[in-house]
Length: 272
Image (cartoon, rainbow, N blue to C red; front, top):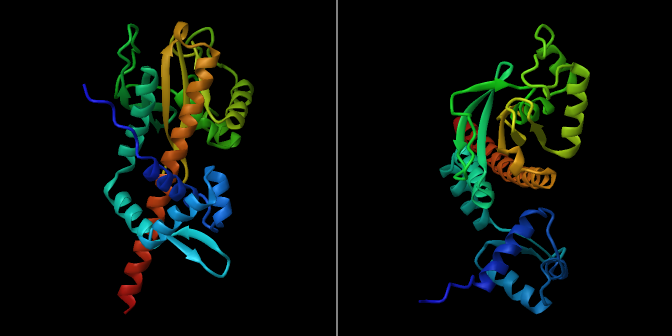
């Protein structure tokens, strides 16, 4: 039996340096790269020099700082043009699912409901009753409350001005003040939760995702039987979803920026 492959340490360090530079568009000095990557300065210098030689990074001799180079932009742009946002969302859902083996949902805002548009089913003994194409109320699902938390309170009041919050279970929120109180907590915490509010014996955590106009339109969630999901589990699911949301939003911003630059270039060519 062959031994498992060991990740290439030098390649890993080089990629870590690129990620670090990507988070600091103003640039970083050599000592900052070394300190933040916990590397000897000589090692950091060799990595930075290799990246600059290959045009993945640039060195500004005036301020002695390194920034991402044109080659990195070209590679990133090529990847963005070939990847659809839904593929990124699905990839993030799969990544979480592979770690916890609990059901993942993707839903879209549809009037005062969430419409399930994707699902990754857990292989564990107890499954969820939800299915793609089904709809559930916003106010009593983690997916829905996550989307509502992305709205202003006045928008939420207007949405339910003529629609009562009907009790689906004994745990369902049925008053607007209580719903708004929970939405405030969700905004501070970063993710929504729901336990037995829509389906008895089911616990969920969710985060909302914005559309191209910046409006809360989608949400992804982790759902599990309540007996399998204690408070610590739900908190862990919430943190995982927040990380996934950050990845998706970074991709979305990059894709939108790329589209904007392409539009600008096309306009300039039209005027020539």
